[in-house]
Length: 437
Image (cartoon, rainbow, N blue to C red):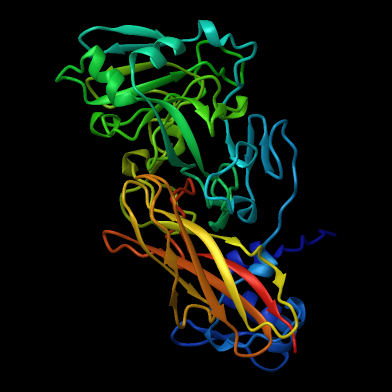
């Protein structure tokens, strides 16, 4: 006899959201794609969530409530606090949203994204950075020479993994299943990449950079690089890119690239090479490890979820999309008895662009309230926002956040599927319970 395997909740919804609604909660799809609950179905979901759902009539079909979707596991890395491990070879760990509340991300809370094995027994005094390729005068610099020959600056800069949000794709995309926490906004101290490139002289033939680091391939093969990506020369010459040697006024954490790394905000974090040893200027698109499709690439046209896509149909993406995050309160919070409103806080960012608005909804997107944006610390820092929502009666609520950038692009409820699970900027949502007075 063949034993049937039970489907998990996410797999069940990925297979057929409408059928899952009927099977789990007795929910029926409305013609306008709004789901509605009635009778036993409404009772079943309310019981699972711990209370009545005031705006259930606006809940989209196939929506797994945030209170059910949430799930984190604490993991300890030396010098880190509260991160959630996704992989241990190489080490990759994200930060739960509520631990990203600070305007400046502490070192202990900055996510870890590694592709290989970090270098050991680092000698900071002897560390050198070489600039080669399509330059007039190839040069090498020690860290002390970088500090003495160029202006040292400190900027608050956000770094986000291109796969942040990958866990939200169905069917699952291959790779680390990041939820929302592969993002950080620390203060980085270093010298401008632009200043260093101008000193060595950028030839007119240079169109791309290539970045090399001291980490080694998981296989141990010294001929293989775990990661070597680059950017267009136009991006490289932006004055907000840093060759950094400090994070928040301290030594960079070993897992975050000590003693020297690139910080190239706005583009996927893989462009911000860690344990930096060499920058090559090339006369064509850089061909280093993970530059070729499908790495850091998306299909050039919409594809059906689960479809096979030929490498020739991918295109490399650059600027990250507009996005927001609710950092306070933590999802799952229960309000005090008699409390009918809630202050919320979070951050928003938009790759090379600027966030102009953040809005909040507590009725599944039926209506929106605008939050207040604080002034940016500097370009490419994330924007901190604060807002308030009110609750008409007791019950289970979801609070959704969406951001808009200066080009008018609005953060969506959901995004189209792609094979590698990149660029998921779907609205962040948290669960809140309002008790009876």
